[in-house]
Image (cartoon, rainbow, N blue to C red):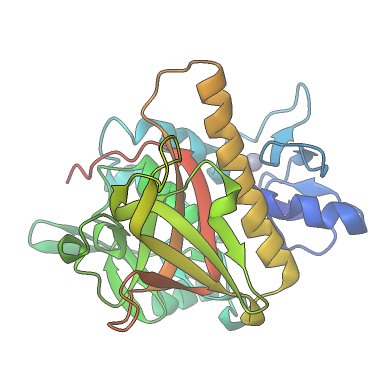
Length: 318
Ligand SMILES: [Zn+2]
């Protein structure tokens, strides 16, 4: 599991933050489902651990039968092969709205019996799923402050990308929010704010930093030219660059981004070492602005909203 609730503060924690929390001392963690709250064990969080941190249940312990969070994770396993029905998704905590942390007042309205909660959820963010000419409104909302669960829903549910998602007062279907960065630049026709994604290089030397910015050079570029001398590696022509403004995000957020990039590069190297045949690649996904005319290859990340995944991107099936 990549999320749990801090038993002391009640805050929902992404597993990726465990490495930083570890420095100040970890807390106790439990399942985020209010009616389950089973104890969860943080794993792989020490600085020496090369793999992504995660939470697991204690040995012999199971989530409650009604636990929506674990049911949701099980449901996602089915979603790669077929469309999930509205009935299946109805009570599931899939993300419908992204909002930065300081703007969230009521998150995770999960209580069905609470009339006020239901009323608020109707008002704050309704779930619409376009099916034919009808638009069905599901009366639950799941507001998230990280793009991580949004990216996971997109990746795991190629048949359900016609689900509506709201990001900073703009609503669009998942399939239109996500935009792959690819060459040539004319094909991309990048406009406005989107969740863009592209492939990472295996070497971390493709990440450069100044005092104010961190630039990630993607594998995607307009072309390649051979090195100036023979046997030198090929050089990229006009590579796409993803730029993070370091002055507006915390040090923790920045090092979390770097750690996550490290995990996926490690996963990629391990698969190569073990000769695993698969179609997975190391990707970054970020909420960002399309390049401006004066800098046509540079994407700007909005407030460090960037996650990494070693994954295969299935084509949209609806
Ligand atoms: Zn649970």
